[in-house]
Image (tube, rainbow, N blue to C red; front, side):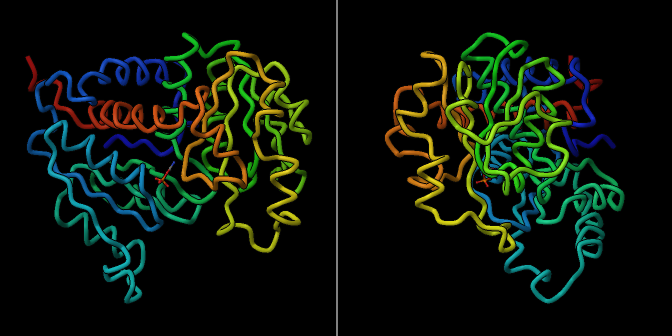
Amino acid sequence: HRHLLGISQLNQYEIVDLLDRAEAMIPISRQERKILPTLSGKTQINLFFENSTRTQSSFEIAGKRLGAQVTNMSVKTSSVAKGETLIDTAATLNAMRPDVIIVRHGASGAVELLSQKVGCSVINAGDGAHEHPTQALLDALTMRQHKGRLAGLTVAICGDIANSRVARSNLLLLGAMQARTRVVAPRTLLPRGIEMLATEVFTDMRQGLEGADVVMMLRLQHERANGRMIPSVREYYHFYGLDEEKLSFAKPDAIVMHPGPMNRGVEIDPAIADGPRSVITEQVEMGVAVRMAVLDTLLADREAQP
Ligand code: CP
């Protein structure tokens, strides 16, 4: 069974292929055009151990638009709450013969572990601070739609890099596609070894945004902070919050991205989030197309199609 566990498993040709397939899915994801339900008769289980609005619902919608039967496991009301382990939960769901399990978990590596215990495809919907591959793919598709390419773009990823699987997957993808990547954050929110993943590292927002084509803001992840917090939210906003003045250092046609959920007034000025350069809702839209492409690539029976 084929899995999507991380961007690290993909080369640039596989990334381009997934983005091309996702682009072709856009009219279908918007329900402007119908296609053969390529996942008809397939069973998809969404297993989210961490909260989600965008990822879980767009995987559900993507599966349904391709004809799959989708079950959402509600972890909070499941037997996980009675102490059932990840592996026992996986074995239990596996016995019901799903074709794919979409997993989000708070521990890095938990999704890969689960993939070794089941007899179906597994897609990583975010594991700890490790990877969130479909987010990086939908971000890349959004950039490509606006800029026409990824190679040579300067992408500044700003804020809580240390706790961010979104940053990691984006850096891997953009690196593979020959974009110039910058991370911009206070030292306390930069993980060890980040200079191996990013082209440039900045602690000053204005320097980091200078001449950028894409400004990607990240949520300050209070739930993963482990006491390694920023001095105060007000101070964080002063130095690292994206406002009109800091954004003026990026290119005039720079787009502003945020994976969501946003902390308005913490990492981003609401006026920027809702402003003309923001592509934040478009990212959500591309999420359905990307997840349709990933599900179709992993699961569709090619031999059964004309
Ligand atoms: N961007 C993202 O993963 O959002 P959710 O946590 O709402 O799924």
